[in-house]
Length: 131
Length: 183
Image (cartoon, rainbow over all chains, first blue to last red; front, side, top):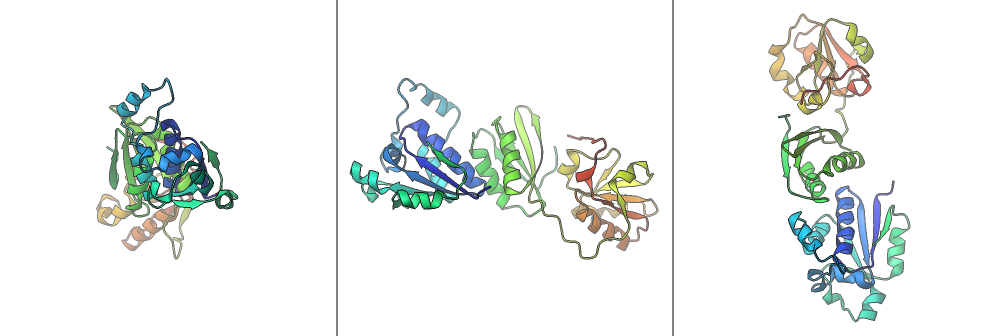
């Protein structure tokens, strides 16, 4: 089994965010090296403002209540935890250009890179996951 | 309650938080010590077991009480080094037919989740202080999980005047007989 986990975060909803950060923190807690490549809508998950206002899927707004009841940490808290556990974040340069995002718009400590940066890391990672 | 070195309160937390907290708590323990994780997340039983396997700890078992799950994990799977092995040994399969005392020197939690009927529990770390509980003339079969801690225990006993001591090999890891739980 590989000691590396590679995750692509390509969507920007609340559900997507939890899938990404749950798996990322669980893998990091299991002593795996973890990198997440944020691309397209996925950049919202590490956007300074955007991460506080991620949307529920249409028609599922009532689930917000369930998150509260189950005492689930907020996404900014999950992000902080992932970073404390050593998870590395890579933001996709191309999507940032397309969306007019600057590095300062994203949370601190994010590395900006291209597809090759991720591929180089992911070539011997197992599993590689896409959300 | 089963004895442990540290307790972690992860009640009310959901996946992956119990694992994250367990990892942090485990880092503070020494090799061989036992952590108790209290959780209400139903998925934590399989998660804690899988996590322990994946990072190299020994998951001992889980007890459920009043809707709280108590998980027990022993840090690391390394056993202490033995410089010069204790010479008098016996196979685990032979001890059932013998009359002496089976002395189980694993941690209390390991003993609780499965031991040989009639075995007495004194963890290796407590043995020196509890020698008075043992009879110097009785045959004593010292057992642990893999034969390493029991080797050190057998040497300790011999040094203190116990003459009828055997180290049981390999240990509970190969015991195929009946297991008594005390939880």
